[in-house]
Structures are given as structure tokens and as C-alpha cells.
Image 1 (tube, one colour):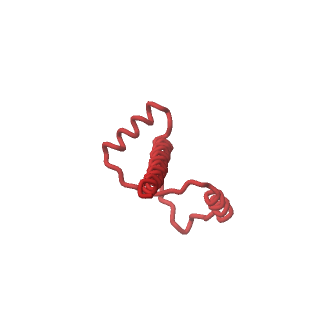
Image 2: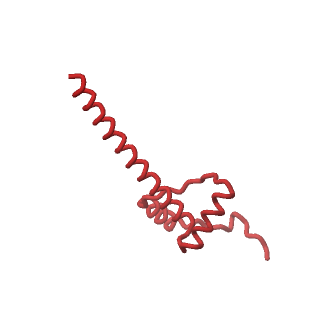
Image 3: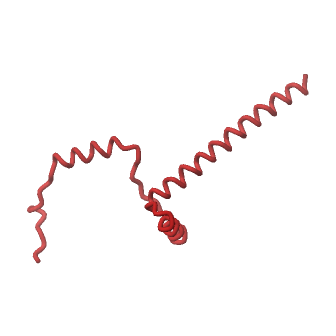
Length: 92
């Protein structure tokens, strides 16, 4: 089988524009990250057990962790405000 020449390749500009428009409308963004082998193996193991593709599973785990972080920060903010109010009351 002969290798195709680059000059023989035809670019489907209509489909390319359509695909780019579809990608622009999505809320997800493609990125490249470096993971250690053990973490990736564990992630793929969890993926196989749950039946969820590992990239989608990683996204879900990341969202869950970030939501917890927001909760912790909002709790700390409330505690700091309450502490400031108590200090003001005691100082008066």
C-alpha cells in the first residue's frame, strides 16, 4: 500500500467550520495534564468498575472536590464574620 502524498489530501472546510462551531458552543475545554502513573492507573480502575469513561470520571471528581472547597471557604467566611461580631460585642 502506498503512502498518500500531502498534496492528495483534501481539506473539508465546511465540516471544519461546523466542527469548530460545535466545539465553541461546548462548555468543556480540552487540556493536557501530567498525571503520575499510579493515579492514572487508579483512575482507570475506578472507571472500569463504574463504567464511566475515565476522563468524564476525572472531571466529576474534580468538580466534586472544587465544590467542597467552595463550601469550606464559605464556612470559614461565616465563622470569621461571626468572630469579628463577637469581638466587637466584647470590646463594647
